[in-house]
Length: 241
Ligand SMILES: O=C(O)[C@H](O)[C@@H](O)[C@H](O)[C@H](O)COP(=O)(O)O
Image (tube, rainbow, N blue to C red; front, side):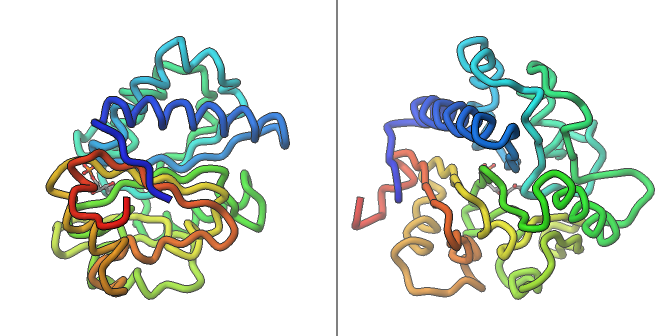
């Protein structure tokens, strides 16, 4: 399903309401809410809103467990760090216990080994099923999502939940949840803003199926729900709205 809104500010509010609603429901149902955050610029508005009293005060943050969909392999202080951005905009401003937060990057370990460790953290908090309550995703103008980039081997992954690998096109190590894990989630929400995403959004949703070229096509929850939140600019090439 796709929801198209005027601009990113409006979409931020829709996403913040949804986050609060899902968190409350999960906490009421099973005593915890598990979420994988996205990096990039798209979620910044959402994180800022969630840190405001209007939203913050509605969530029992002691029962929120925070993971990431992907990370650039840099320390948290680096301006490229997805976790660093989430701390600055959200996590430093809400009472979520530090032990509930699982950044992907860690010192003194390879991205590949960290991927195996991260899988264990997911199992510890989510159980062997690995079903996130919510996974937030962005999409690049090349159709990548998380660190599932066009033409990379990680797109073929069928078993592992987390992978660390060297991304030649960006000259950096990445660590990412894989499509098989993401697709187990109860709810997956994509944020897509801006005219530069219009072509990729059209190709992913209405173009021919080619997940090697447009990896966001790999995202189809098995039993959960998929929601695309787009602004008018990103949705401008879609035929079905
Ligand atoms: O670490 C990353 O690079 C991301 O998680 C990536 O998948 C991102 O979500 C998209 O590139 C969209 O980025 P923007 O929101 O900045 O357009």
